[in-house]
Image (cartoon, rainbow, N blue to C red; front, side):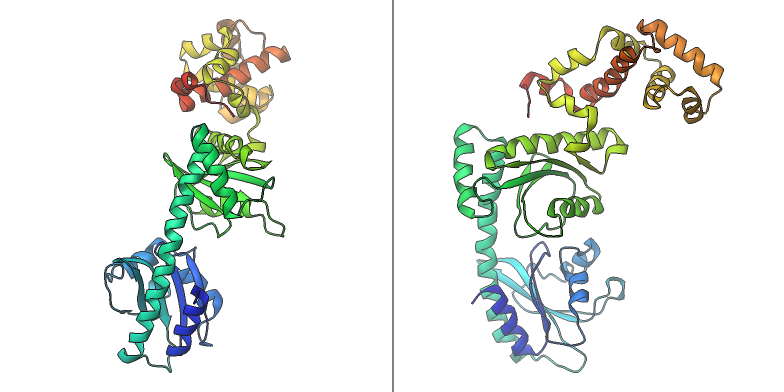
Length: 376
């Protein structure tokens, strides 16, 4: 009996709607027997969009620890009607929950719940098996993206055997800094450091799963980096490095986030072209360093704004809220310090790249990564 069959059997025995979620409150299966409980309402309360306050409400009744059914009362704050929770346990732990949602005209007796708890145990065993397989796969994903050569080779075999990523098929890797609602069954996740890596296979259909997952994470308050799309598992590491860079850029430059796509990172992509120290040496020319070392915040902000505004003095003065004569004075001072002529396009470009990328490298990638030679 699979999980869908378990849910259907419980629903038929109790003449009620039943929803099965895992221990993270992600939707696994549902059976809507009652006309008073429609699919949209079930999904809004107990699916992957389940708000933290709703999950906390249910868990406050001890559902993770009990071996008996738990009745939760109505809670208008989370739009929850009274319901019965049947813990789906296995080997002493809860791996999920069957929520029974009876309608107003039905009643569920203790005698009815005894066989239902037995069915919940079957669900718990299957969820436990799935959870362990998911944990093993998370290790494989981490090895694929950041493991040594032997671990990488083992990961290729393990993930290919899963059938989720056909040999040579396109994939994209995301890096998520923060909470991520459950992204779906065809993705693979792994915690790596402070980030969550999400591998997404290319699929045919009107819905773009990569954008959907990224927007879901951003909606939960996370920063999300999205790497490029490449063919085959061996290219996943390249996409992962790009996704990690996207998170760092989103953290550094608010205009680029909360979702930073590799294709849209612009000049920041140059920071992935080699060891950080080498890139820094290339973009932090003596002229750029002279301005940074001067440590005059007004001049730094003026230079960055002037260059971002493509040398438009009127627009720059407006953004900064200063008189044009003040702007001209500052620009002259910047030219004096740097030795650059800002009327020359190539010299403006030198300063613009140096200020934009150079500060990003040292503030957010750090010299340690330069010593490690991180590359895509």
